[in-house]
Image (cartoon, rainbow, N blue to C red):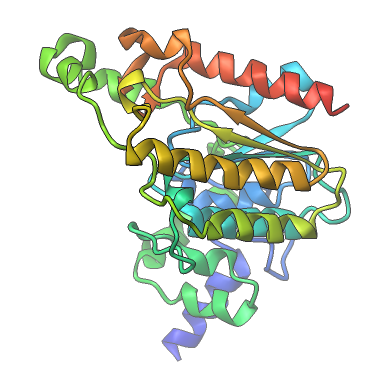
Length: 312
């Protein structure tokens, strides 16, 4: 009986604001991590643009993009996620934006999208059950020990007029987190930044199921929805060296997504995994794949320019 009562209570108060409850509740969530916030933010009808990916595109600001384009964007990134999690999140967003189709979708295409494995194995825990197409799958996922702590927090949020709401657009600036580590005061971390790495994805011959899956998923969106594929910036030490297998793998992966962009209307590939002046400045990076705000502003400007050329 306790299990039934627990599930019924959890379903009704909708602890992560999935919209499945029969009750009309206060909008939004208390402040919490991005994984458990994705369902709430991804179904919010005020946002007609969305950013998907992991920390490699995390600094791209929905607020800045809105200023530049007029499109209200939400950031649906979650650090340390891979294509499997990101595809599930895109699917959730598209399913909840059918009455008012999205104007633009931005996806950070890092090296993890280059995998030849069609199962897209993920490395970190992720609440797939929150985004499940099946109500049964969602209810099964509610049977969790952490919900014993979350239910009182949810009730406090719903009943208090002073309860703090998590940021609706989901933006999370990671710069302060890196600053705490004292990167620019620690020579060993700066030296590590200069060490060459192989980051082309390792897949020279294909296939590239990430491109195939993303293209198939986008068929549920109208063709007028803009799709901006961003190969995120990396420090110069992370660029593949010409003539190496790593460069061949990087080029093959780039071609797979460039071909997707060529086939689908209103789709653009923006490539920041090429040699650019900003990628040579170590003061603009924390490590080879995590850049600082000045580079994010450059990426945002390029995204806005691409959307402008598409008439968005």
